[in-house]
Image 1: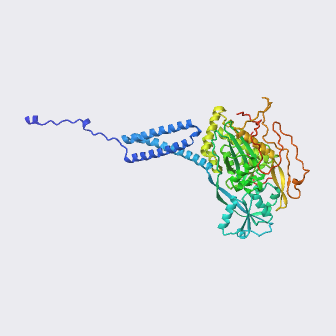
Image 2: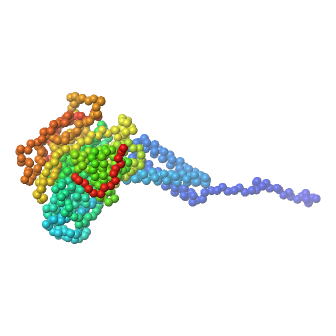
Image 3: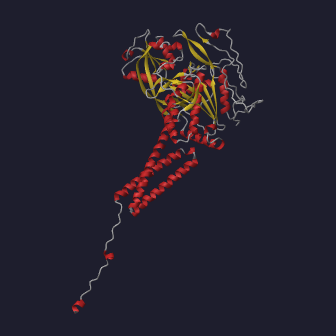
Length: 622
């Protein structure tokens, strides 16, 4: 009994106290490493985005500040979440942080892609050094009396003619040297002279652009020889080009001038002086006919069609326009056929009214070749291919080259209006991509961004915000002239040239000065009569014809310069536009110094036959 009493009592253990606690699930080290790497990637992407967003912040400082602030706030939250996830070693937090970081990495990657794409396009447009693809053809004439050349090997010892300083000349010389062919070279000022030399047997082979037939098809006398020419070899190559040094101006304060050129196989198919006054937001567009026969600055006194200056260099083109008009060019913008097609397509096409039915010559980007498309009469919605055909056509219209200049100005205005009215970021990206590949300018990226921001702010403050393009008051003009024939000794025939009126050059100069000269004191009009019930049509800045002596037959047996009986035609001046009586000049027009600029009455702001392959018809607007 005592033994039982002395027996130690066995304590009863509480199950709750003796049961072991289950360990919490903690993330493995691999998860922490993954989370850290992902956070670093997201941080890098956000820093890249902040950098590029800040680079273009001048477009809208307030909006970009908000965007940067939001991005930094999101970045801080993500970094904080990652820190606490690793610190607390909580699997739930790790999974949440991972999902957010993966989402942020995806969004950041897309944003970085868009910003880099924009920046690349802008840099491509504004680069000072770039490459051009040059299509070159070695052309022979079947009826020539010189050395017979049928294939590439026959060129050795033959006389090869080329246009001085042109891309095809450089490409052909390298191509023949690599093939071990050693010809005798002979240089000429322009492609027309090279072709004339081929026909007259001065040379055996001509170095010409691949599309030499359409390029030289401005004179029926020359075009008649095309069927007897053939290409024995054609090739393409990239050549380096340099932009002209630009002016250093604040585009939001100082008026500036831009030479706009549309390039086609080295020639300038479009030549336009654009002036912009950022104070009045007034823009003038003055077109110069590409066939204008003028002194070429780099020909040392020699004359040719003005578009030939571009085959030498952009610098020669600028100097020639400055010498002709007396206008200093601040900046240049050069575009090609591809840019017209792609930019018009990027804005969704444009609407125009076509007055005459014709088959228009356009461009195939893939094959880099020309072909015809039908252009019916009426209201049309044009894609890029048909817009280019509309911009190039002149033979179908009664006023010829003037119609082409007018259409080119119309397309520029309509594209500009659609870009400024759009709020679609994809359109902006498409336009920039098209421009980056095909448009070059010496206006800096900073200048472009600053001016665009300035224009957008001015439009939202003083103009209809739903129609931003209305901020610009655009006036169009052209330098007019007349047709003449010049004797060609080599071909023993007269060839077509286009001579400009000195009066039109002077009027165009004055209209440009009215827009860009901030120091001029304009004289006021004596009286103005206008009714609110009438549609106001501004008078032309330059007349179609002027009272001045014309030489219609130059050189040869019918030289009109020595025929004193030839009298100039008297043209009545247009109302409110002064008639100018001027004498022919050889070089730059003489503009009186310190002459008061007359106010522009239109300024409402007081401060051949074509055949070939035919593509589909453009959409007709009902």
